[in-house]
Amino acid sequence: MEFLRPATWDEALAAKAEYPTALPISGGTDVMVEMNFDVHRPSAILDLNRITELTEWSNDGSVVRLGASVPYTRIIEELSGPLPGLALAAHTVGSPQIRNRGGVGGNLGGASPAGDAHPALLAAGRDVFVEAASVRGTRMIPIDEFYVGVKRNSLAADELIRAVHIPVADGPQQFSKIGTRNAMVIAVCAFGFALHPKNGTVGTGIGSAAPTPRRAVEAEEYLRDVLAERGLWESGDLLGAEVVQRFGELVKAAASPIDDVRGTAEYRRHSLAVMARRTLTWCWNDYSKQIRSAA
Amino acid sequence: MRVTFTANGKPVEADDVWEGESLLYVLRERVGLPGSKNACEQGECGSCTVYLDGVPVCSCLVAAGQVQDREVRTVEGLAAEDGELGLVQQAFIDAGAVQCGFCTPGLLVQTDALLESDAQPSDNDIREALSGNLCRCTGYEKIMDAVRLASARKCAGKGSA
Image (cartoon, rainbow over all chains, first blue to last red; front, side, top):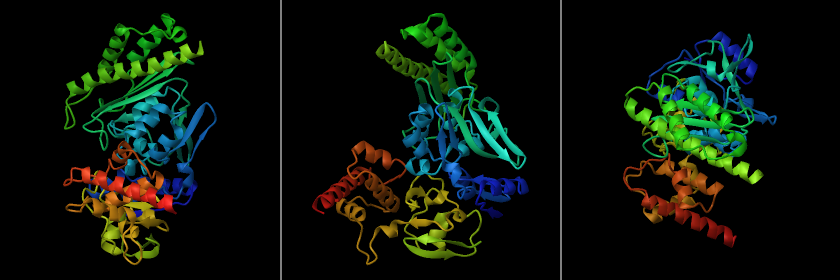
């Protein structure tokens, strides 16, 4: 096995081109588990820790460019304003020690359906992009095209994740996750929700309840239409139990979970409907307050 | 491969390190620092918690090659050079927060980090900070006592200084 330690991004891309089967490692919170248990023995390990730009983020006021290795701890501390959904999801990752090392790049690279960042990224809107690069150039992969199968993503063998581009929140966002305790939990299932008042849409993200993270498209469209038809964006009036209930049912219907050691498919469907109703209610209450205090 | 780094303020060097080896293994088996404990090897238990460049991490999840030229501080580094125990270590002894002791090194490092950033944490803050450190003996109450004691002593020390 080789241990590659590029000092710059260009060196990292060159190394990945030369060793396409090299396994990138940053925080190591997934990669080292596989290594310790001999689940996976790659031909080479490509350490990205020396490339400090991967731990930087920038915000131009409309989009946050989040470096692939910005640890979850810093997402919580520094980005809960512009990226509230992702920051909430980050707070549910592992433990403080894990959050000090792990970042969104690893979640995306692993592409586990249970990755905590995915529902928040999907809910953040259609304009979330994974910045993937290789010696051939840079691609901006829309988040909806990124997840292609269980633990599979649309990266080419010579590509590395450099950053994620996420629109700055223009409305309330929430994240909910089911597990056996409040820490060190791989999600039984998870749900991310966001209101996007500027373009009159809502975002959803389902975790751990399908082969890939996915959005509940029909639930998004239903709620978008209801909010528009009833003038609720302007009034901030109550949604009513029927709308909340229907939204939950549509989210539930969008999942295709399996029975496994963490929970049954039926339990996942049920809890997704509950989480969808709760996160919608939390977000809408916050939004209503904003509307009323502005009036 | 060879890995050189700083451990508890001293330069150390490990030879014949396997590329997939963890920092924990290097500490325990190659540079004579067995204080950090090896329990779960998957970041679940926190027994192997060390500072890496001042940030507490699970050393079982850091690849050895990643610490090249960096600074590691282990539980051994919480005590003074002459063996005098650090404030957190003494508090764990005085509160009786140790039974089998296997989780203790990780709890000490994580508590040290907590009190560095917040000398007077609430009980909820303590529980959250220690949520990645499992103890199967104590039921955690004595550990909570120990952290509160360390916090009180740290604040008292600052007050008199």
